[in-house]
Every structure is written in C-alpha cells, then in structure tokens.
Image 1 (cartoon, rainbow over the protein chains, first blue to last red):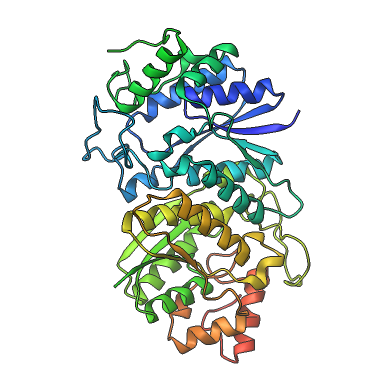
Image 2: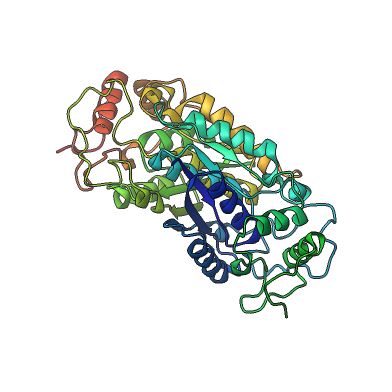
Length: 223
Length: 223
C-alpha cells in the first residue's frame, strides 16, 4: 500500500481529502500543522478525532507558530479584527491570510514524504477560494511540486501534490464526504470560537452554505 | 534602503553573503534557522557574533527541530555516524543531508519577506556542493522562487532568490569575504564539535581547503 502524506487541519476539506486518499487505496500519513492561529487547540482536537474515526495510525503534529511572530495576519494576530457576517465572495485577500502558509506546510509535508518515500502529498485546497488565498491555486501547487522534486534526493520519488477538491465547490465537497461516510461531525471550521462554532465568520458561512447546497444538515452545533 | 532577508547559519558562506548584500546597499534582515542539528547552539552563537560584527539589528531565530523528529539525517540523528577524513568530492548524497532543508528554510524566509515587503531573499548556497545536496542547485532556487511568487499576495513584491556564491568555489568565497572585511573569525563551520573545530568532518575539510586556495590563514582554531 503506497503512503500518502495528507495535510489535515481538522477541518471539513482535509477530512474529505483523507477519506478520498483512503478510498483510492493509500495508507494515509496525517500531518497537522499549528501556526499560532486563534483556534489551534480546537483544530488539534478535531484532527485527532478525525484520525481516530478514519483509523489513521501514522500521525505527526508540528508547531510553526514562529510564523505568528512575524505578524501580518488576523488569524494569528489578535490585534487585527476578524470580519463577521460579510460576503465570503467579496474580492481581495482576506485579513485572515497568513503569508506563505501553504508553502511552509507543504514543505514540512515534503520532508516527511521523503523520509517515508511517499509518492504523493495530498492537500484539500480549493481553487474557488483562490481569489482570497493565492496559495490555494493549482498553478501554485504545480510550482511547488516542481521545486520539491528538484530539491529532493535524486533516488527518491518526486511526490505529486494531489488536490482532489481543487475544482469542487463547498456543496460538492460536502456531498463527496457524505458519499464516503467521512467523519464530518468530528471536523472544525470556525475561525474564532473553540467551544461552539460562531456561525458568522467567513469559514462558518462558507461551511453552512456548503451543507445547504448539498441538501444535508450540518452535524455540528452553532451558537 | 531596500530590505534583503538573508538566511544565515553562522557559517562562512552566509557571512560572506550578508556582507555582499550590505555592500550592494541593502538593509539585511537576518534569519537563523535551527533544525535539531548537532552543533546548533554553537551555530546560533556564531550567528549572533556575525550579526553584531555586521551591525545587523533586524534578526529572527526560528526552530524547526520537528524536521529532526521525522529522522533520516546524520546531522540530526546521532544514531547515524558522520563520516570523517573522507574525500569531500566523493559522489552521492552525504549522510548529513536533511530532506528538503533549504525548501523549509526558504519558505520561512518567504513569510518574513512578505511581512517586511522585502524584494529579495539571499542564500549562500554553492552549486559546487550540488552533487551532494540537490537543494543547493540554482535550478531548485529558480523553481522555489517561482512558487513563492505564485503563492504570495498579488499586491506584494515577488522576492528574488539571490545566490551570489552559487558559482564560486570555497577559495573564491574566502577571498571575497576577506576583500569585504567580512567577520570570518566569528563564523562556525564544523558539523560535529562545539568547542574547538574538529578539522576532519566534511565541512571542516572544505573550509580548510578554501582558505588554502585563497592563500590566507583561517582565523579560527582547530583541534
């Protein structure tokens, strides 16, 4: 069984991504990265519960909160207010953007992939989000895949950056998760609360809209 | 004065790289990354002394020893023996290779560069070493430069990965450092000792050969 390193935040998208990797016959090696975001303890708990539900034994948790020390993001800098109740489709980069977050995370995944001789790194990025987050575009994934392949041991496999959700919308992601019986109830999406999801931040709004589009109830509670 | 983020290990090459960046009129923002290597305390001390000597005020120190937890390198795994007294030109990847080390470090630099709106990231990699370390090739630097530019905020500068030593040999690097009065006496190169340099590891051998080629005495002591 080939090993797939899957980047897993504890959120909906990465849960469905891991379920797809398993459905395609890979052994999942689950990588969770905390980066000083407000809800990191809650996301870590969700990561553990999703891994338990998917029977994933191979797990690594890495802390890169040094990114927070550099500043520049509302997700890590509590002096910057998070937007509430706004249109998640509004143009421009959200204040929750963390500079080069996905590049940092994918490189940690690449190190682990090389040690495991894994042939793929899976990441639940969605191109629909790319107006907000430049590091969620497939063109970015192609570029970093190339850099990773050039920078590794010549005798080791060049891992593919696999992004099964890249062209799906949130409703399709929810539907795919339901189809695979992925443990969506164990996931956490809210950007600002750790007890009960706020239901008003960008991430909650996007999730709620996804379940509505898929026509299934969201199994988690909201404030 | 434009800001240049310079990756600085505390070694000879990065000291000369920082001196070149200053000579070209940049304000240096110095980034030191520890990754669980055997001599990290000694390298951190050298980093501080080199920064002091170059009057660099803007400094960040980041610990990514989670890479060591993944295993796979003699530089971080003391169960793997480091070679001594061998030919530094021998073919193949050295056991001191850390999978994707430079990619991880350059992405941390890219995050800081984006926060600072820096237009360049400087790195003292040497193509001569590339038979050993694939992530020291210019082709790798070009690929990661492209990924960083695609993954950043569209309104922010795409930083150039600047590698002024890439085509120099160790003798030429030493000569350039002497010419710029770079604080070579404050640098540390040895891979295995922290008190007095061993003089027999690959890194010491390469350094000693460089000073010999340049025809100047190495200002540090050896065992």
